[in-house]
Image 1: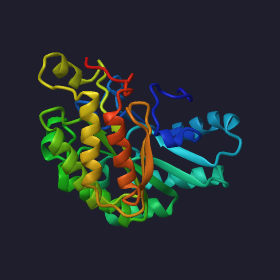
Image 2: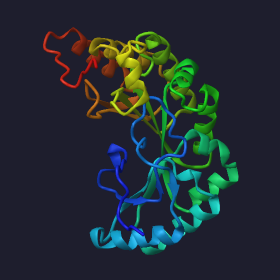
Image 3: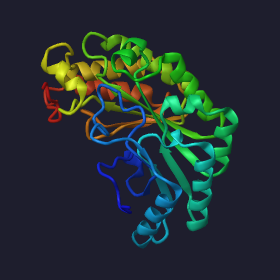
Amino acid sequence: MRKDYSQPLYRPPSEAWSMIIQVTEGCSHNKCRFCYMYKGKQFRLKSIEEIKEHIEWLKPMYKNPRRIFLADGNVLCLKTEKLLELLNYIKKEFPNIERISSYSGPLDLLRKTDQELKSIREAGLELLYMGVESGSDKVLSMMNKGVNQQEMIEAGHKAINAGFKFSCMIISGLGGREFMEEHAVESAKVISAIAPHYFSLLRLVAEESSELAECIEEGKFKLLTPLQVLDENILMLENLELTDCIFRANHVSNHVNLAGTLNQDRDLLIDKLKRVRKSPNFIPNTYTGL
């Protein structure tokens, strides 16, 4: 039984210095057409004994971790009793831990009862990251996300009402040129309705191993140009209605780095994008037209 990580291993940018405990392998949904992260992995739930051995393997590398991230894709698919046992064990082994976080799929949040989610939060899981990806029902269906707009909002509300700190992500360009405006406006609508504590914006990067890459090569899906990405970002920001939401668009995929608090800094962020849009020096070296 292996004690190290099953590769590839992913975590949010904000968890760069966290100790990562791999609780599951892969993603139980793993059907999103744009996603390449776990396509080469067979989804598997680790046993408590296996996870404990994994933690023992990690201890020499992390003497006194302050933050822990539970991987892989959707830890909340575990039975509540098993997850509670794991969280209690982690707190016992690392008494100085300040925060435990994980990804959370919308389907897993919807399947948990309100009381189950509250119990998990009280046991120590504090921050959840959910990939909303798009607020458009057309785009969500096209990308095989497994939920619709209203279900995405319900999942977010369940997490926040249970007491979790909640972070949402949108992928700019996910609607392609055909649904560019709808993706921007409807995504802003969903994020505003959820009202997460954190909101991040990434740009679509179609890896060869994703199902979407084939559609791009066949001309069925047209990627946005860099300027269209900026236009979509501007439109999305213009339609957001948030209060004290920490916003970041500083992933390596983003053409322009943005950081602020919404909606307080919305006008400043939009002005920056418009200035870059007009600049003759705008050369997006991350752009690929495939």
